[in-house]
Length: 254
Image (cartoon, rainbow, N blue to C red; front, side, top):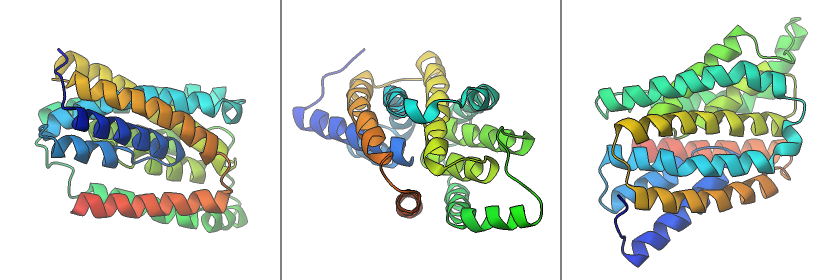
């Protein structure tokens, strides 16, 4: 059932959806915009998280469409990694429904910090690995697939900064530029949100009014993020990732 919302609440949730859709496409962590807004308007943490996950699914689809040029030639990668994202997303969604809300709170900031360090050091790490005769692959290996699965569990559970984690895993594993890896990230994170959203629709309470407002806003944001995010040079994109990641850590610790 869709309950009516006060016009101001509806406008703020819609605007938050636009911002979250844009951030998710460019970097990740859009949840840290929409989730606190829903909490502020009186939704319980679980209902806010569930409704936010469902609402952000269309934005991921819009972002993937905007990155369709960068996704060309990555079908084999997607086929290998999609199963890991989907299974991880299901596991994470189930954990959200059965574990205490505070279960992952202590370790999530540490995960994000590690991912940021890997993103910043990725060029040097790649050069060091190459000097030792360890070269990145065109297709993901077992370690990368396992990492994507773990990121999927986290994404299905909460989702904030899932994109940053995926970017760090993929950038260290695959021989490609950051924009094409970012396009891959958009699809994988979207799959996690999709399958987690399906679990939530079946087994949890969704605030459909808020979810639909976030959905419409996130579609707009997804197109905006794809349009402007792909224009960023690699160093600029890396800087944006770091700024958003630090913001995510601060918000989660607060």
